[in-house]
Length: 478
Image 1 (cartoon, rainbow, N blue to C red):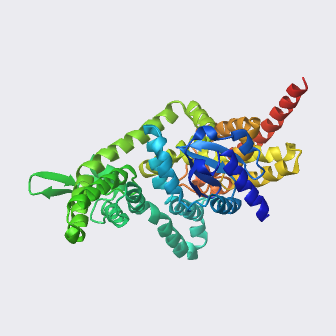
Image 2 (spheres, helix red, strand yellow):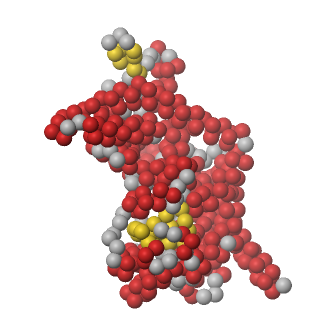
């Protein structure tokens, strides 16, 4: 098998214009990420014919070759040995590729760079919250009761899981602060401190902000009175994304500006405290209130669209999500999901994303039965299994897009399932693992409807793939 990996690496290098055309190379879980000097030298058709290559495309200035889990590491090792390049990180390659991006692509890339490192923490929290909901949901296992009422000894377990599930969301600004300052070139530890500042216990809990702002039950907003000159709301930003994202950018710029001007002998004394004080005041006094309002407007706008025209909204999202994955713009939805969860207690976006993954896997599964060649069957079966557990790239690029009609079938199934769950108000209290395990992270009262959506996302892509396959064969005969 080692010879196959080396041959694959040799072919990849050749069809990308030779080793002199490769500036940097890295790999993620399933793909080679390559920064090229001249994209016109790519021989795409020949590259996609390589046996281990499941797809190839340009995204955010970086050329990506889909290989699949485990095998990508071995092909990458051979590629590095053949080109005699130094190993690079995905961030290194993205940074080089970003020089070729337009402003919108650069914005999407920022979201991707910030959220991808913290995604495991968010997904873990989502799964734990799903388990927590299963234990505490009434009528799910017993009529009129939940598991805690039937088995009181579970209370301690429920409390522990609840605390673990909430940790990532309560301290989300600290996670984003770390990742964002790293992305913007600042000190990660200062980013963590800034994030923790925004959720300090002395600040009004962000979830109680609405009640205090409306003056319900006599509640009033507390303020910091700064020397009688101006006031700052004592309000936290638990679960908020935009405030810490913008504040981390400002923090990094302030820190870098100071480092260039403060003598090295006193930098440790001056730079951190000045950066935190200046950015902290700006974050609590200006950045936080403004970005919270922007985030609320964004969430309200999306909710309004789905309330006003739920079928149209679900149709468009269900049909367009998979194409957005190809462009990389799907990373934007992580921030939208988290904003919806913070503001409304649940998101209707993520369940549709999970069903899109299932639809892609189902179309690939149909190709397993349709394909004649053993290699095609093997690729389709492994890709379908991967998609059913949330990793869609092998199915999308290796099977569905290369054959076209299964991709169309998956989009039809995804859109139909999205319409159904939207009309039935399916919500998720957190982001979990996409694909079949997604039901764990769905609100208990929505679970039955989500299961029906899952069936739709399996059946329609399979049936449509067979129908379109037959139509294609008839057209070829004609």
